[in-house]
Amino acid sequence: MSFAVGARVIVLPLGRKQGVVVDAGRGGHYRVQVENTAVSCRENDLAAVPEARGKKRAHGEPPATATPATAVAVAAPRIDLHGLTVDEALARVVEAIDDALRRDADRLAIVHGKGSGRIRQALHRHLGTMTVVASFRLDPRNPGVTWVYF
Image (tube, rainbow, N blue to C red; front, side, top):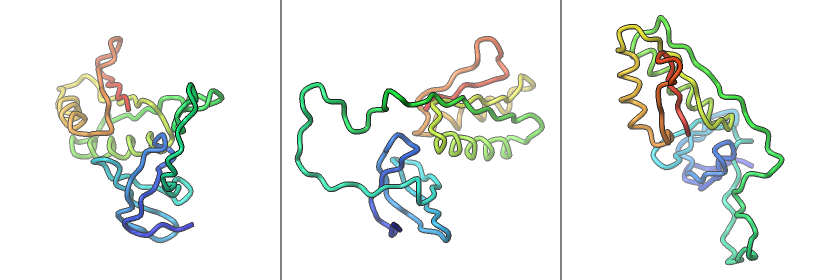
């Protein structure tokens, strides 16, 4: 199934969040706007939004977006920013977050090092503007690592 620009879709790796196709590229690649963020997806990462049928859930029945009890926990991905400029580091972080979300990860470890703090400060400012980031914090055992939670 192919999706046209403007089609409403469900992005499966993002916990079945809904979005709108903003660009349909070649080879089954799409850009989808989910809330305030555009994500890159493959066609098999997307599903059509079902039409509302007005059917109510039975009492105690979990919502359709609930995670099945048999779901396997995904290991937290990690990215190392040592040796990069601030601009290069921020670009790599955006790519790593996009990749982590595609893999259905719930967090990401960003190793920025202790150093002068320029990358850490710029990283924290940037993370604060990203709507896909629920929260972030320095690792209490290693202040050269920031944990990002989705």
